[in-house]
Amino acid sequence: MLQLTTIIFFIAFSLLALIHVIAIRLALYWHFLWLDMPVHCLGGIVVALGFFTLRDLGLFPNKFLKLLPLIGLVLCIALIWEAFELFIGVPIVGNYFTDTASDIGMGLIGGVLGYFIGTSLRNLH
Image 1 (cartoon, helix red, strand yellow):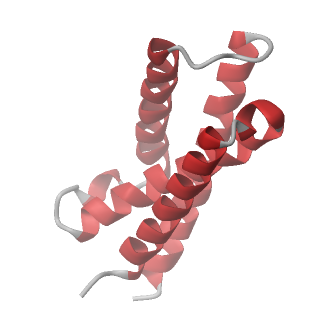
Image 2 (image 1 turned 90 degrees about the horizontal axis):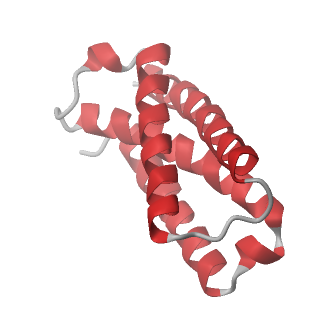
């Protein structure tokens, strides 16, 4: 049976994917510059919950599901994502460094939220 953290991860991942596909197809990121921020935050939540899901599936050690190691992993994923955006040529509106720093910051905030959601859901069992 699926754990609650895994179910919440799949819901959050599906919501993130849906929002992102719609935003890309309708160019919403360029019409609503603020939309990028909550999407990166939700991305951080998804990444953090993804590690809880990997733990639930027995594919990730529980010892890394502490706040600092998990945030370090979220930071690594956020940096990889930003490098990917740069590599594929995502247009930047405004200052590149400010945009990238705010994206990473929102991802980290999401990672912290995801950590607390994951630990709260784990404690419900």
